[in-house]
Length: 87
Image (cartoon, rainbow, N blue to C red; front, side, top):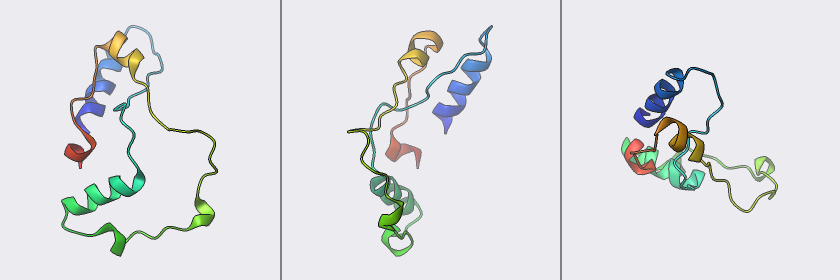
């Protein structure tokens, strides 16, 4: 969250409004993210999260990964927190 707020603040300091991608540049599965987040509060995500294949996304891309190169170049912003540290 801290990284995201810092990126937003840096965007607001610009003379002209622009679009930026704010991303870690690291791909993480929803399963792994749920495991980390639920473990943070002492719970097993498997006891609470239900998956339904009818909601699966058709495979349309090999990998989903945000590219924050423009934010790094224009805002001097890079994420400082890992996914595991942010939960």
